[in-house]
Length: 504
Image (spheres, rainbow, N blue to C red):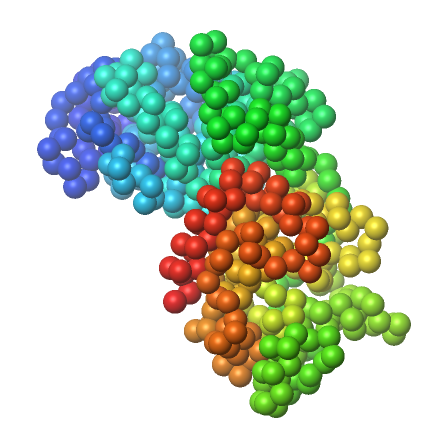
């Protein structure tokens, strides 16, 4: 969509939507809709940042309420949903409501009266933007609230689109004091809650400092505010239908607040170049059978032609649990690791990996990553970055959804991980995973041979059939999956699609 710049925009203007000549015409921006009936607008993610940056500073800093007012600063104010002047002609796409489910998009939730486009841009930029190719939120993608379009399509846009979104971004923990953001959160997949540490100085940061909630102070749905009190009962019924009870839902909200809080455990990142150039991990040799290996791995290695370096189980034995002076620090060059606070870690540009500790060697992984040409400087890997004998190890593991969900790159090695219990926990948080399977794995390596072995299950069987070394972990991981994806059934459906479509 393109409109004249607001400084030159009269009350009556022209709208052009690429590929839809029938919509070209004159309309009143305060009462008419540029969106055809039964359709919605989505904004391309890459256009969001550039569009906001092209706005005058005064416009970026104004609250949404100020921006939608026709009495705002001359030349800056514009009606809700009519901000297309700041975006190029291909920024928006018009999508039929029946086709919205085919698009991977993030849904943004924010307050009108104390947040601004500048706040949203700063928070998104700090976390590496969204991994979804499109975004949707009412201010940019909806016409004025009193338009005929909104009257006819309000329910779909504000109740169905959050359900269909692949990510939910909530700007401020203080939003969790309101009923409608909690409604959206009830249906959400991979929610991200931005906190005071994510915002620049301004009304939103001030409001978050004064009204933000934590795991301890969250009052639950029962204390939520709602402008239209009659909506409360309907929202409550929806939450109960999805989560079983309001109490269960509130418990999940508290888990999210814990994972994404500003305070947390000390973290460590490994420099990508140090990993890719580690001589111990890249040197291949004929792999030998070990008593602790699975029967399938033993049968593969018995042929004597499988090449590789170390698996993570071997790294654990040789560099964490060995009596020798070797430690994981000696594997890499000096300065390979960077230690940082949890708050700084959440804003770092890093990659994560999902792989089997016993089913792939590090020479295989590094070979794939070199071809992938990673675009980040750091990587977080459990076997190297998490103290395997540390007393606070579980403090980090329990934040796995935030660690894997916040990664800028996500690499999955082999379909064999589909049957591993803790791998499903990681995948539940994945926002843009890339699957590396037989076509990318070295053909003489352990991982490739396992992928093609007749006994290997490479189709996703569902979470409840995933294998755990300790089955008591199943309930903990199930809760993490339900919190990140609102149901195991939804997670199973997404994973079946992922493993069936990608990596063929």
